[in-house]
Image (cartoon, rainbow, N blue to C red):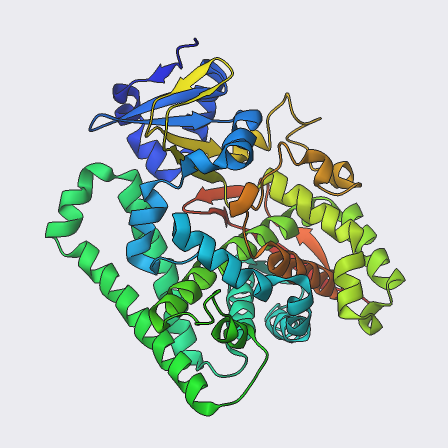
Length: 441
């Protein structure tokens, strides 16, 4: 059997400050030196197995997924901030929640939300000032957050509450990143009161959401939004979710739903700014589908060029750039053996750029997705894979197609940056996305 190469603790400590800022170059160096799987000694008798082997990822996430659970990063570390919802739960609880919530995210149900999505997106794009260089990320971050808010609550949520929820969501993510990248400071975060400060923010978020849910129940009104759908879903025994469980799920939707979308949209517009020929193709497709008079469902299902661009953008810059799993029982894959309890971290970023899997892997080539993403299902994981594939993938794609087509129909985009910079946190975030927008005639 193959001995999996190890990166020593001394090398991890030596590069710890670089890793805190951006761990991806450190991982890439190790992949290039050690191969597609290596183990990293991070101290406290803990080793993490870093993988960019697409076949191993498919095996773990799909073929033998029953032997793998999420790591404590999600089932413990993230839980303390957002609760035990669909993203962070395991076992029977996860199965029960997934089965119950799946219908709410079906394409037919999401069709009811499209016009609200469009209204929110058009409204947010009014904040774009033509012919001025701006960092587009704050606008798109707010757009994605407001789209989730309106899809969940229609007009029931107060602006002040939503601004507070947005602040808490982003502050807690930054704190979690500090905990994960500086595990040796865990004791300090506790005794200094730093951790309690952020946990109190989570309690505040839950209080806000509880009030919104109670007001909705008391009103007796129907809005056909996601909150109505979640309130009406039933388990097999005919009972609905408890209020605590409902709030857990809403917090997960906020955390996972807006962050990844705003990142993906920002990278997409940066790539389009660098490749204006694809702006022209999207604009032509929008016109061919009827422009502003097009039926929204027809647009999101027929904008093939736009979808190719989005797929390629998420290949190069996958918002969920790592997927973690732990094996319950000992397992063997090819010539590698994993004892029970191994922490496996799959680098989606590296798999999506692997030179043996992709033609010109670092080049923006949306035409590679002419037949959609299905031909690449064994090596392309922007929404994960297997039973735990993101439940909101259709919601995200619908939202992003509307956002891209709406913006390209109104503006031409120019790049005011040299290279696309990234900030890897819990998700892969853009940095210095400076663009200039010119109104179309």
